[in-house]
Image (tube, rainbow, N blue to C red; front, side):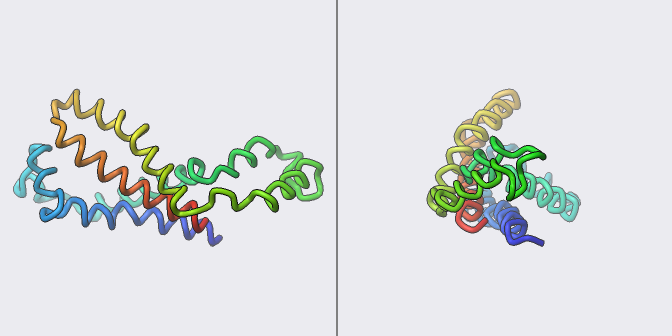
Length: 165
């Protein structure tokens, strides 16, 4: 396994860890349950192994996609990369290698990745969850709790990926 894959895998664990804290009844769990119309009885009987397993797979997909938002150098690579010119001896391959040697670490900080993660939470998660919540007749608290969770989660994921991948 490559180090970048391990960083993506680490970032994929963030939603579970943050979720345990965020949705704890002493933090936002009670507010979330009331806003979503759930109670302890309705939550019983779920297959938690399946829920957490699928959640981890989905978190991995999210972490994989976040790297393209927080690491700007991917844009340069995708612009130049074709099967003919990705080798280190091709002209574009050498241009890319030179570019990366000069600028490959620009904007590669936790703070920068966290900024883009939070921004993605606002510009992507809020419209999606907000629209769903309106049609499901959920209130502002429901939207605020869930979007807040994803903004924090994606901020941490983006920070980890940008700093370490």
